[in-house]
Length: 235
Ligand SMILES: Nc1ncnc2c1ncn2[C@@H]1O[C@H](COP(=O)(O)OP(=O)(O)OP(=O)(O)O)[C@@H](O)[C@H]1O
Ligand SMILES: [Mg+2]
Image 1 (cartoon, rainbow, N blue to C red):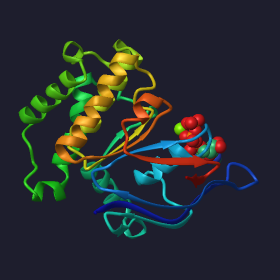
Image 2 (tube, rainbow, N blue to C red):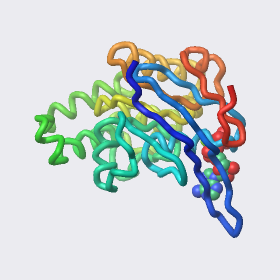
Image 3 (spheres, helix red, strand yellow):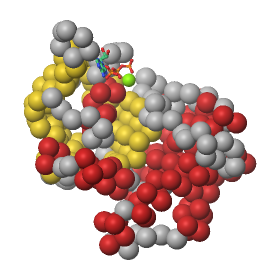
Image 4 (tube, protein in one colour):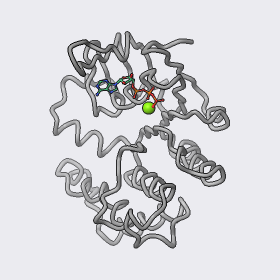
């Protein structure tokens, strides 16, 4: 059993005004590589906050967070950016597409960033633009957007934009996918298809999935459940 993420007595507090808000309280979790987790719990329980910490977008206020055994506190901002680009695919509703670029270009961007990264280049992943384009087109086809590749975000529906974001999250073959309500904007059929795509990825490549969803049907497909209530893990 390999552990990809581990939290130890993790707390997250915010200071929106005078008073401190404790959003996550003493979270102790081990996330196993290759499994599919669903995070459940009422609105405001801290689900998105926990995903942000898992994605190294936020740091814990107290306690420890380890990514493949490495303490996140030891990483600089730049090192975290490299880690994110290599290891993590984000499907967050707030991660908007870049409006001035087409669907295809939006999907290609993370692959360009990765290819530009000196550390990645050392590993021989300095992929040609034509190859990146080919993979991006395939990714868009997989989410059913073959006929929308040259549309800019404002020329796409909300659900189509979300599917572009899914293709974008997958382009770098991440080892971990973090998805916050990935099917929230999608109709039932397309939602299922997008979810199936994530499940296939888990099966084929052993990608670890952590999904927040209120959709019980989708939650049933996940083999591990994390239930959050008022910042605590409840079992
Ligand atoms: N930057 C912030 N500053 C202050 N409070 C915050 C901040 N971000 C989140 N919170 C608070 O933390 C709590 C948990 O928020 P979070 O977004 O993690 O909830 P959630 O479980 O994802 O809810 P939902 O199901 O509605 O998406 C909320 O009460 C929210 O108001
Ligand atoms: Mg949320």
